[in-house]
View (cartoon, rainbow, N blue to C red):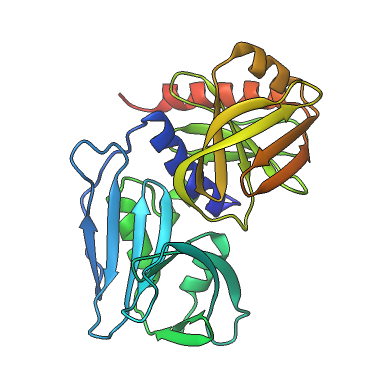
Length: 299
């Protein structure tokens, strides 16, 4: 999969939004790490944590909620207040990555997207720079810990993803397929926001706006969406990491979306406009992919 970050986030976000359960798995053993299943009673989306075993003052974990992976670091010197903050991370000989971290209760959390994942696989200590201070972590077996925590929540490891058969997914020009645990999704890149379309387990349309630099707490949000010259729709969406998801149960709104050429979003954090095309064909392809996946999945 080309865009691990969006695939990871979509897998969890759609599962949480639509109540799609993720099959649990037994935990693996990784030297230097403790893998724990922390799924609560009645919680449909599985949650597991890989904790780096060290005696130092700073702690590091890899958290998995469904398909979403988060790298967290904690220290008694960090802030307790809930906010977002730019930090950087890197290893010797690599260009530092800048990411927006979610901060609360002395913990910094960032999504493990494709670039962060590639960085973690490199040799050498991981260095996080927070407010001008470097925090260095000499951590063994990070790729194995990531595979173990993904296996713990029932998600495929990287090797399993590379070797599995994906449903056929023919899409219109410029649309890309994103395979997720809940089914299939299609993505169209935009200048201001990327557009995703997918279907929930009731075959209702979920429209998603995404930006790589977003990093939200999981929470409801009010928004308006204007499809072409149609009257703006006042909707409730759900912010999750770098996505905002909206359920469109109204057939009239779906019909307008299928023919849309422009989507204008108004969020509390700003306004975004994007050009789209062939949304109807993309939705048809998503439905066909979802059907093929359901037929190929053992009961």
